[in-house]
Length: 199
Length: 272
Image (cartoon, rainbow over all chains, first blue to last red; front, side, top):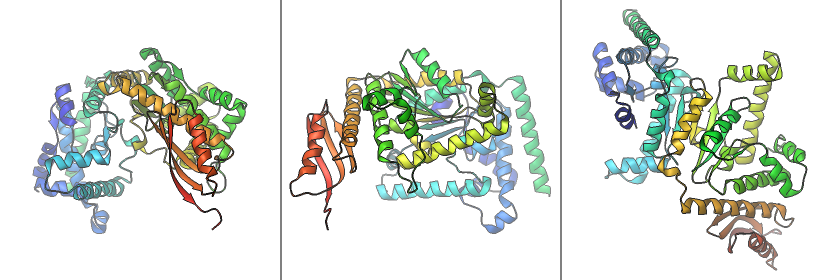
């Protein structure tokens, strides 16, 4: 979906690059950083707010990308990292389990249908727990997104056309005012990250 | 080329969106007046039907027989209106009544509480506290009603094809986006889709007929129709005379559009 949108809108596609940049700043590997977004923090990590630093580093890297203009982001926690920012359209894509299993089977032909379904369920549960612990929210709560599209009846291409139409509305244009806010947001993220690292 | 069903909380702009879509697409529009068609079909006053549909569930959390009968009549009236394939519906429980019907786009609008409160302040002249309490009451009642009637969570996004948050979109913008979606190839009205809609219409007639009949209305029955063949499922008491099965088949066959009735019933002994 992100690739289709990037092609259709002519925007750069950003995903793992954000994690890599954040990882470099923190002096950890991108995989280790990704792990912080995929596993629920334990009690100690919650008490010490250890994850905050990692989340903030990714948010700061993403904010820098946003100051460079239009983009399609398909990385971790976009609905929270870019919350309340102007010019941002947050989209949740839902797909029936059967379609997700089929899609994964096409690239992992050695796995059985049951193994693939179990894997998807596990990832969903872990993601849902992560969002609950980190943000106290339900990952499927539609109010976290501007648009939720279910692919049970709408094809991926049609959903892409729909999202591109939504993104093309004038309120999502990066005007001078929006740009100013994005730069201010990036500066604020940098400041908070520096404080957290020093503190 | 499609059927659009708009679901929303009270004062969320659903009617305005439905009107915009109907005007832009040139489709007929159907809202709460679907209850009038349903009441006429049953021969009851529309007020009775509307009151029953909004009635709170009983102490055991089950909808009464009358509520289920009225809802089946509403669904039937909606299916009759949808059979041509082009319609914008913004009446009760659209997302759930049309959930599994092919070619139907169920859209849910989420409006921020402030916007909804403001809309009430403008139209009803209420004070802010009363407006907020009113919206919460209506939302709670609707959520409870959906849970009892359909066993679903009204906020579950998987029930809908699209959920639009009006924090960032205006109604004209949503209307424009949806017009683009409707123009996509999967919503082109094909002969097969029309046949599916006809099946849905006949299916609704069978369900209603089973709920109207004194001999079958208390049984837990459901019906599916595919190209004129009705399959009735559920639980029913087994009788030596076979009268229940015969009655179900007879009701099915009496429905216009049904060519054959098949029973897939779980029979139980009423006097074990």
